[in-house]
Structure formats: structure tokens, C-alpha cells
Image 1 (tube, helix red, strand yellow):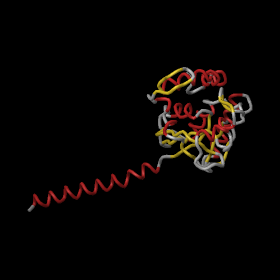
Image 2: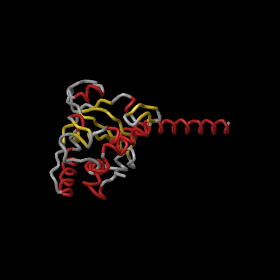
Image 3: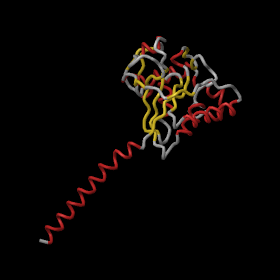
Length: 218
């Protein structure tokens, strides 16, 4: 009888443990926060921020425009009002929104109102889409960056906007292995991305502006 009671006790303890695990999993997921930024080519912003400790993911997409569920072709065509944007998910216990905002301003050319690097036009403009809780931090990060750079920063701090993920082709492009046809010839996506980033002059310009403060420029 005592052995049966022991088995019941162990089984009950196991059920309680499973219940606690099931309860705690969504609570941890709910602790994840998001920050949406536009920094020119979304492939590059996604690639940069997925390297940051505490960032749990980054999704390429569009924000700030008037067209619902826009396509890449529509956005780059210039008729939607959308920016190429990246929604960054992060664990605030590991990295703060303030730190991510500081990294963001130092990973772009925030003095350029017409696009970024070789990519020109409205869809390649920079911006921070800040929630009400992030607005003060975003304004401070912009002011700090302007003081550090000694030049006028034109990147606007905008209200949080609906974010539309781009199609699967554009997600994690920088590490993809599919063969694509580029102006450099047929290449795997990762190689095509590296060739594009170098030819576009992104890292060169960021290093020219920010020097040793540039967090991602190689």
C-alpha cells in the first residue's frame, strides 16, 4: 500500500511540474519586446541585429505606409509610403531598447534623408517606429548620437506603425544558400548579399561617419 502511495505521490509531483512548465513558458514569451526600425536595406539591418546578444529574432518587412499587405515590388516602386523596416525581438533582461537604439543610430548614415548608401528613394529612408514606452528612449538615443557625431541627424522618431513581414525570400537572406541570379552573376544568397553590401558601400560609409563606434561595420 505504501509503495502505491509513493507512486501516486511521484505521479502527482510530475503533473505539478508539467503544469508549472506549461504556465511559465508563455510567461517567458510574453517578456519578449519588439523594436521596429528602418535603416535602408532590410537584409543588412536584419543581419546586423541578429548578431546582438539578447536579440531573439529579426524580421524583414515594411512599415509606415498606407498600403495594406504590400509586396516588395510595390514598396520599392514608391507608391505605398512604406519604409523597408525590421522588427527586432529581444529579451529586455539581456539587452535594453536603449542599447539597441544606440546601436541602430551608429549602424546607419542618419544624416541622409534620401535613402541609404547606394539605395535611394523613400522606401530606403531611415526611421525609428517607437511605441509610447520607447519614445523617450528613442529621442534620447537620437540626441546622444547627434552630439557624438556633431552633425544634424534627420532620422525621424515616428509613432509605432503596423508592421508587414516581407515574403519568405527576403527573410535571413544574408545566410541563405539558394542560387540566385545577380548583376555579379549566379551566386548563393549569402555570397550575393556580401557582394551587394560591399558594392553598396554601407560599411565604408558607416566607418567614415562613426569610426570605432560603428558596431557592425567590418
